[in-house]
Image (cartoon, rainbow, N blue to C red; front, side):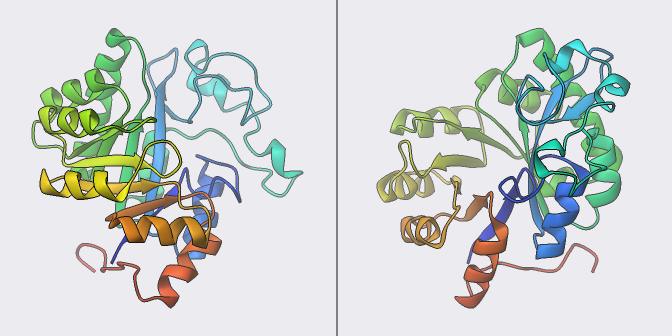
Length: 254
């Protein structure tokens, strides 16, 4: 059985990292959500993947160069020809206000940045998780070991996960050294069944990414991953359900 995380909501099908995109993913049946955060100029946590606005909005320049109010003025659904007219960059608070009780699990990625920025981001992420009371159903992930070390100082018991683009056995050792619970192994750039086996032997849960087709999913299942992230949950979710492999435990308290 595996968990399916909607990658940035449903990044291949709706505006990524927006409330509109998360609602779309929810409507498909997604109950585990992956998202990303960056710090704004006025100290807010903006939910957006890239450090610049250019790819996913009609804005230009660095996220950190704008206040949250200014970021709200950009259209984050412009690539979809008016289908998602209200898509905007949300704050982390806005995402959790709507989805904390609805989603079963979250993977929250802290993007690589300068150490003094990561100190602020990790502190704010920790405060947010405690305020919403959802630290136990969030895995904080990052490519940046500094971010994970800092997050563990802020919340020593917080589950964290190391991501690596060119995954090697040394990354498994680093994940263990950092006190990680999870490790995120890529399908296309370094993952293998052998790495998954070695991760499990070290006590690490493994997320495979990205499972964007049924063929991708078959490989990740064969590897033995515990969860899969996908840009196309409309394809992958029903496929996992048809094979009775989707872990779909009830929400806490349900």
